[in-house]
Length: 235
Image (cartoon, rainbow, N blue to C red):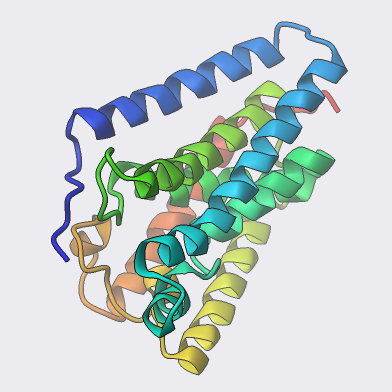
């Protein structure tokens, strides 16, 4: 299947701009002193949209390719929620619902260090004319927005020991998903091979060395994100 989506076209740049604009607007609103009721509506709406984006991935796959064997095979191959962006979207949705500090913390680090890569260099095949385009960016734009809103807007900030917890969470994700890939013979998280489209993985060396490079970059980004995160908490 030819790839209709092309990075850094008008539609892609517009999505990235709207993602940034939404994050800034929500943070400014949250810090302007609105009622808890209004903030709760925003939290629950954002959380529901993230869950919806994750759930729509297999639905749109079956809608496009049918509910026969081929459609279900593609769901197994590509649409189960084992990618990091799916996991962090679920974590951030739960953080939005519960205002949970630990989920916010890892969602902030994974959302900005990981999901942002998908926003900037998407592994997406469909352009703006197709529903998959909007589902993809609802998740890959929504997760960073949620992370920024929770930390900078609501003041649910990383606490002492966040860096080591992020390292442990990341190693846990790698171990679990590599085991899943081994059992079902797939490539979730792109842990067994690189994507078939251009991404930042292309600059990290061959498999398995790009996993080591990726982990090192992730740890460096965690350190930077923790350094710039606001201190203290309003909750």
